[in-house]
Image (tube, rainbow, N blue to C red; front, side):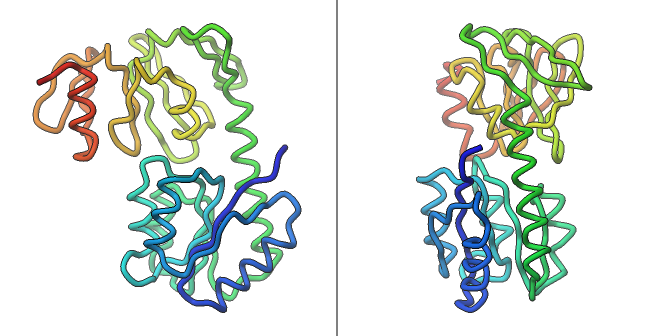
Length: 235
């Protein structure tokens, strides 16, 4: 497996330096950048792809939770903070781990290994085929072929994805980012941080909500609405 790219975000120089030292001790990590200003980090993430973000939470201008939620295609996130108050919100937002300062190296390594395992599973769960009309997903111990035209939507549910067709649904251990990269962009569109939908499955649009042919209603992020309308041919 190639090295995993990561960045560090911490407005406290000492805290940032500690994490930098830890990262250098782990051979499968490659530090791409390190930031004290979370706004600069956000700009970097919007233009660059990374595997893992190590971030403090309480920072000026924008906190770590807000930064995570602002990303359309968030990488795996490990929060490293002195504050316990955000732990529940962090795990509900899908963070990989939540470390309380001061962090021991063995605890840091455990969190990084967990992230590495998640990325390895994501890469192994879907085998993209030369044919562009199907994908294979691993679900409940079986490799299942799904025609893209049959998929109505994909929903992120914690560490898993739920892939829904007209007749069944399948759970697979994969990130929504990985699935978004695999699916045919002319057929599928990520309407918000938790959903990718099949444009051909859209029955109607009402304000910021789309209804699919199976009756499922999905909210559309405000910054995605204009692009969705353009793809659907709505003037």
